[in-house]
Image (cartoon, helix red, strand yellow):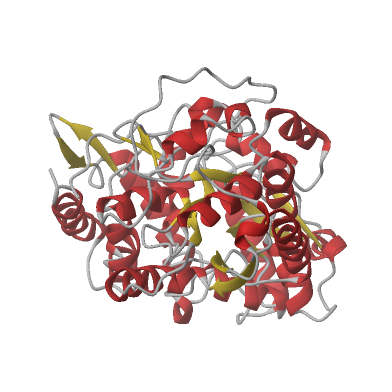
Length: 445
């Protein structure tokens, strides 16, 4: 399916300003998806079952949330819910298999930057009318629907906003006399001290070279004034060879190659694997989301408690404030081949509505998208760094093939490994990566 220009929520989403009011909407467009007026409810669905895919690893908090949500759904519709948890690194393969085999979910969670890729493959139902007729959804600021809106049609509902910050061992910082880093140099110094005192098998600042590596790389690139690509003259132009991108990329690879704050034997670890090492006492700092605190607490079986962990915003090089981090978030969408699209529509409205949408975000370590709920985060010690960072957050290229460059082809991950392992110098690695990135992003132009 050929898609047009995506209304990207990059600079605008950085606003996620506390107290922003929802904007007005244009007239509804035609679509084949279930609408509020046609979606049935109540006993008509008794005895039926809905399949819902959630992404990540469940924990006590998430299990409780899903139990409450699904119980309310059954009360309203009479239907049961089969919740299946899919690890983030496996999500692309699961969706691809579902699209090919016709055995997918009815409703699925998505990373917001992945929606365009699946709309391009005609995998998601058009929910424009449902969104425009739902009072709760109209409270979500209009600028937060950018990733979900393609050719003026809406294909997913924002579920929780998010960005990344640095999770660190608060107790280690205290015992080692480490202050919260305010510059890149201080970040390296803190990482080195952790390795020196805790051992070489510990990552002071863990290098992420796995499926979600660009979540960790991007703050350094954006902080230096660089970017991945720009849409110019009707096509995507790679920016990986620009001096500003090179500066951020060099710093990130130097964390391993030069500074030694992360081990060379772990160049392909992703955030899930890093969190497991953190739970085992093998990581001092790494870039992640707020949800990892509950997961690590559970994985460590009490060895790493909540009061031993905290977050800080990744700093700009010169200490002038937080570095821009990925403007992310999770969405909820109806799979195009849903066996009962009307029932799926009822679930989406409940899950992403104000009550359960706010709970989803808060209890999952994300930022709530409803303005009054977001306002409460200003004084929350855990969420404050995320709210602060989100004000300057940025997005990756809003192209349906970004997921391929980011995940499947691992363009930047391969370039980083080539530099760290000495197989290419940084200029050659970035030149090759830039050519590959442009080829991937321009496939559908």
